[in-house]
Image (cartoon, one colour):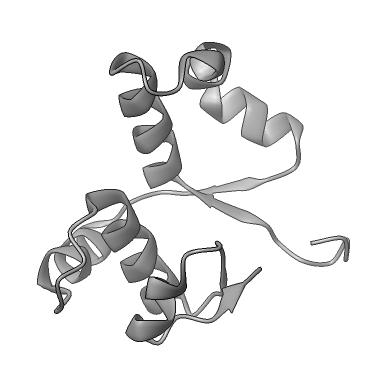
Length: 101
């Protein structure tokens, strides 16, 4: 991440997940972030990875018991774009996604 030549992608699914958790009261400290997710990401130098129909189809068709819709989208995007993902969740490795952290 510290290498300035790297493009750091943040999935639109992260905006969706944060906003959902704010709405449900599970992430009350992130209200400001949810209100201006794109602005925060751009100010930090991140590139937003939009959700495409290909990503959505891949997420919907992913095999296995993992049910979290946000994780399934992140997995499908990482697969489709051939990019690693920064997460502590080991389940991503079961889908052939290179996990950092």
